[in-house]
Length: 596
Ligand SMILES: Cc1ncc(C[n+]2csc(CCOP(=O)(O)OP(=O)(O)O)c2C)c(N)n1
Ligand SMILES: [Mg+2]
Image (cartoon, rainbow, N blue to C red):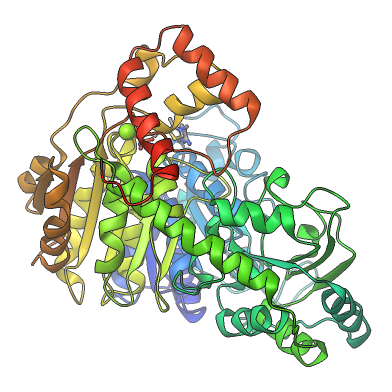
């Protein structure tokens, strides 16, 4: 049989190094699927429950493997389902290639069944490169550009293939006018600023007496360099959400996360510094950075468009984080006055004690902070941790203590619900031997993560080990938003929009052949984690958590306090619980050592 366009397509992607594709079938891509079948497993097809999950998996796979993530969907509804996951990758600068089917070329423009103008639909999310193939000789350069642009520019790209074209015999571009002759391959360049610019940056950093560093996902490969520069400058380091794994949390000058989900030491670091060094971060909330003009700024980013975006910087360096820091280090002088560093370390030590008191405070029935608190010392070496969006992201950001060699992520820029389980599955395909833990709210479970447990049940036996735990915070509430209603809007909880049904997640796990553990007693948490992490199969650990424990921001503004008070005056349905748990959390700040 002559090679079809579909056969050629996978052969070319395989030559680019693609090994796994997350997708869901449909008649818009049957030509591609038939060809993949003929390719004898050279590319692995991972069958998801919903195309959006395939796109989240592609995004997560790119995050955890450092390679291109690929997702595949049929024409029409399959293709539109991909879009949210594609945006997740787009906003977190992940290289993802989306492949979508399309109706037959002769029908296009005919208001045909499942015909969607995908070029227009994808134009924003895959703006770096989105093309629909018309003829076979075009397919080679569409693949080459779709892959090269995605990995080189860390962008989302899309290739749309009409279904009739997929089964046509493949023909290479003929040697004639109007054809394109592309090739395979990409190596990343070494990107380092010029010496003069490094000197300007060094002068600012050497002048500073109180240096604050903020790291993001762009510094994930620069752990040693960030540690070294923080030591030389006597600096404290705050971590943006996506940069959580840049530094281990047991370093005494790491102030933890920043922002609404952040820590008090990070807040003090940013408000007290006279110099800010930002490395590989697009952390969006400028109000958590130094007040404009109060600090001199240096920023390092591989993407020029991310420079001087959140704070007006004095020196903007385009460069790879590790390479640039290595080039900068010899130009820096070791700060001999360590008093700033000491004040940061004191604040960090006190903060961890406070977090422990907050986590150990009693609640009804289980304090959600304690779920993360008990997990930290039990995290296996090399663990990969994912979190969903919701209140659990607070506990993930603040309470979870990461060690060196671990990876972790969530939907950062898009902050979408529904990423934790698909990310965990992607992590297992990227690193089948590493233990993976997903932290998920019950609302996010109901939205789509629950269905992806079926994908875990389908594939876990293929993984080198079965260690994959999905921890569900069952609070029967869309809690993060409930607290936003109270604190940001001054509204009482709107029960119609916020209450969600109680679902026995651990029993669902058991029904589909996974292990299920249920905890409603805080003293059982530790042993439940031990059991889940050692289980002979993937496990759902369902914990009945208290929705009235407030995800307190690192500092409360007067407006927020006023809003909170007015919420109660207006009659919040959970008023007594909210007052009791908030009081306990606030009291734990001033009554050290007491367990309530
Ligand atoms: C797709 C999507 N829809 C809505 C939101 C808004 N949102 C953010 S957190 C949240 C509540 C999540 O509830 P749950 O998963 O139960 O976690 P909890 O906050 O209760 O821990 C909602 C609705 C979002 N971020 N993403
Ligand atoms: Mg919830």
